[in-house]
Length: 168
Image (cartoon, rainbow, N blue to C red; front, side):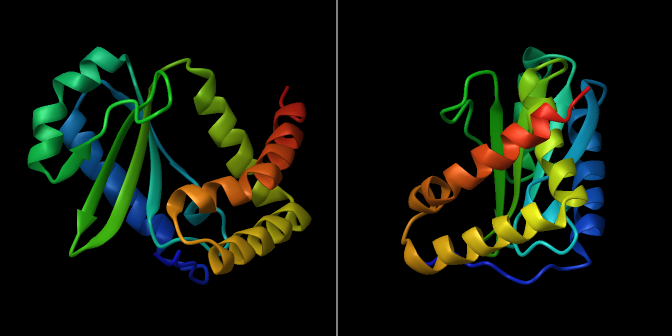
């Protein structure tokens, strides 16, 4: 399996906004915010053409109550999917991944970590360029999503540490 990395698309923020609005209608009141995260949320950064969202909810039980509605709208519910306290959903349309949702309850430290990483890449062109180079190299040399994630891990941890140090 080949990992596809595409040039930045100026339409990604609009798509994220539309998907977030749709999630708001599906989840209802438990949805407090829906953050656009991941590489498609960083202008100028090449990415897999999949929108990553982080729904922030009042609590996970309230989100789980919306599960039937989300599944009826085409979302695959994958539970924690390896990360404690997360609820992971994805939607595949026409054989292509469209959106990944990494939902957390309000106050979970993972929310701040994701947002700090995104915001750091937005503000630091050198780190953004380094991350882009690693993403391209990894996409060219690995054959699975798992290997792609592992390949990028060291640079992500390094940038993540810098982004969290800068937090007030």
